[in-house]
Length: 266
Image (cartoon, rainbow, N blue to C red; front, side, top):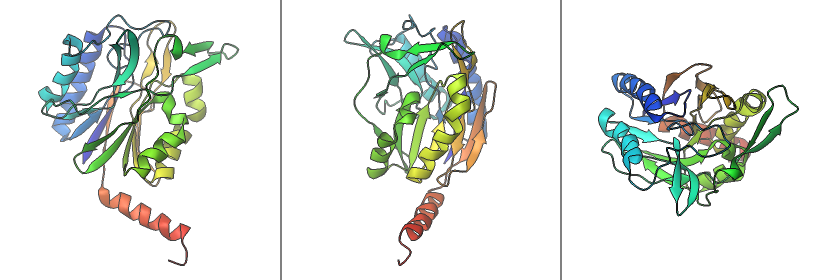
C-alpha cells in the first residue's frame, strides 16, 4: 500500500489549511497513494490558551469539509485531529474516512501534553488540560490489509498504548503530532523509531511544522518508519507531503527475524 504523510504549518483559519491540504492531496492522487495521513490539529491551530473557534459539532459543515477531502481525492484520510465539542467538552479528536466518505471511527487523544520550558530559550509553556478533555479509548481500524492503531502526539511517550495495539494485531501505527521545537529536537526521532522497533510495525508520524502564531512553533520532521526502525521518509522542514510503500511481507520478515533472536533454539 502506498501512503502519504502531510506536513503542515496550520493557521487558525481552516480555509487556508484546507487549501494547502487539497494541493497535497492532488499530488497524492497523482502518485497513486491509497491513504494519506494528516497531522494533529490540521483543521485549525489555536494559540494553546483556548480552543479554536472552529470546533466541530456533530456532522456540521466542518465535519463535512474534512470528509470531502476523502471523496474528492478518492483516498483514505487518516489520523489527523480537530477540536471537537462533545457534551460541552472539547476533545482533540482524530477523524478517519474511507475513499467513499464512510466514517471509519474516531479517536480522542488520551494523554494531554503539559510542558513548562519557561527557562528554556523557547519560553514554551503549554497545558492542554486547560483546553481539552482527555479521551479514554484506544482505537484500531482495518485499512485495506493493515490494522491501524491511532494515537496523537503526546501519546507517543506512553509505550503501553502501542503494546496494547500490537497485542491486538496492529501492524501500522499512526502518531499525528504537533511536537514543540525543543522536545522535537531532543526526542522526536528516537521515540518514533522506538515505537516501530518495539512493535515491529510501520509507523506514520505526520507532524506540524513552523511558526503558527505568536505562541506556537512546531518541529516538523514528519516520519514514515518501517518495522525494523529504518526511516523511509523524513519531511524535514517546510510544508510538504512524503510517500512510502508499505509491505506486509516486510512486517512478516522482521517479526520472524526477531522471533529467532528471542528464541535462539527455535
